[in-house]
Image (tube, rainbow, N blue to C red; front, side):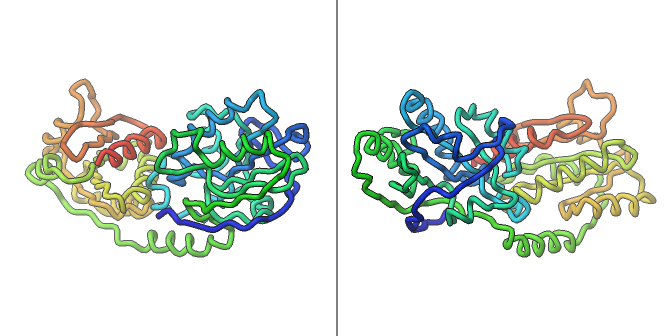
Length: 348
């Protein structure tokens, strides 16, 4: 849930030395020739931050010939973010995922990582993403607050950041302005304890299987829900088994509170139940898990393409309206499947 937060003035720009996604190390000195420096705290998984990504790219382009630099900092301690807090994003806040976001959104400004030690984040005292800190030539704070109205993010020239930059390019009075910010609380290292409790709770959830026949498979495949369903068909002997089960478990933890349904179907005989259960427990898959005999799998042909000779491992995402969405055989691409699940849920 996005939060509203009042921001206090913190004075001069603190010193920093932060790694950018482009491989460069950035410090205060890299921007000393600029009359204005906008330091913006943004996070990949924050829904309000995502709203303003394209606007920041446009703003950076608009002011590229001016005496202005826009620098964006990712402040979250990644391990302290709860899985369901990632349910509205295609990416988390790790340095690698920052690189992916910068590439996908074509960021044209330095995107810096402060999610490990969080020294710069703590010096400034920022608590919410997104938050803007605009500094003048003397690196005194002249504006702190929101980028703009999150309900009208495309109105760039009416945004608070745009107007503050334009005002301070021509004004020498350096009048300070503050606005309230609306977004997501930054996760700090001390928030890790709560995240660890949640992970322990996942680990303690009951993992069980039940036997399914053709009739039961037909029901689960054809029954329409208000949310998308993910089917994973596998066998114990599949070389991709361990990694794929962990991948779908990770995605299920992220999206299950938004309503994603997960059904795993292991093709096996009854005597293999213990092996199946053990693999599912290792992956912490407390989903709907079926064991199906090889002579009962004919309903699966409705979701598996006819040209696939070996049935497993195979996954299929089915929309809430029954539409066949992404499916694939072999190793599951977590990024691609996550994006497809997100898009499907966002259509609801």
